[in-house]
Image (cartoon, rainbow, N blue to C red; front, side, top):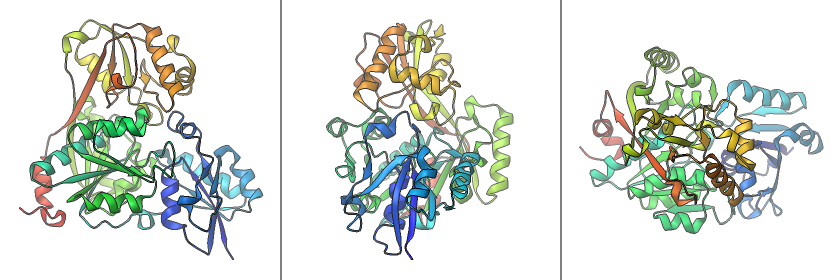
Length: 448
């Protein structure tokens, strides 16, 4: 009997689960993927994917594998005689995962989640994994700091990012970014720029893609150490020698109530509480207690996330429109981000509410996420979304745009308003990155 499988995803982890657990198997057939509706501000529309292509699916799937909207799950289970539904995307509450499971079970299918032993690939070089319990905890800040420290030791780091498979999936099988020109040539989305630009600015090579067996093989060929930068709160795709998991005391309790963030925390060697300079001590203590309960063997690290702008005088007394990192303030559930912190730190007179000025897809996004507090999520999965973002900024007519998104927004939007970029970095409190790497020098091949 051939097991008939449907994979619930969001065009990312689902493809990796297929590649590692099902591709080439004769005893199982994946009959469909489903795509979560709008998990990342329109990402499912960005590439227009209606199927996982045969070039990636393998010879057993000459027509590829169709992708359907997730609301059709029950109908698909019946129409395609599905035996097993596999849940395969991240930054989802435990409650919502089991709602999905209940839908599958009630329709007559089994319900599964693939574990890390299936998904984690081996690399030919040492691996440091930086993960988190939620989107927007500050993983990339930590990855940058680790990469900088490795470079200072004469060790070549290469960063491997969790997938953001927009555009042509076959062309994007393996993607390597070394320069800003590489990003421009690839036509990447704003979300991708948010994750790649600051690494490239520091001369760090970044890999991503769709087929992570090939991604990791190629990245390891030019690296002394791989750094896994796990987007959302994704499980590592590569088996780590050192596993650091970030927690956010601005969202206390989430570390034990989201999938697969809690699994990451339970596997961590170190739990790093970031952004403590913006958090209440009671919330920091709450997170510490939760970490100690679920992973008493993890060492707890503490850090601040420090924001800065190049021209503080421009912010003081100004009416500012704050643009924040999109995934953090949408499905990450944060009401504000680094741009808001900068507005308060540098004395902005007012944060302009973008809602009355929003158009098109930006207006739709603000309607969909009513928890947002006078911030504009960075949109840019298509030319139309960028145009809507530009029009919203122009309509709001602020003194300046305070861009808390990690990339250089002025490279993407063309507006008649000054764009002030907010930068942020991690400042350790009870540890140093040099010391942390020194403690694991042997397993990371760093020497002493």
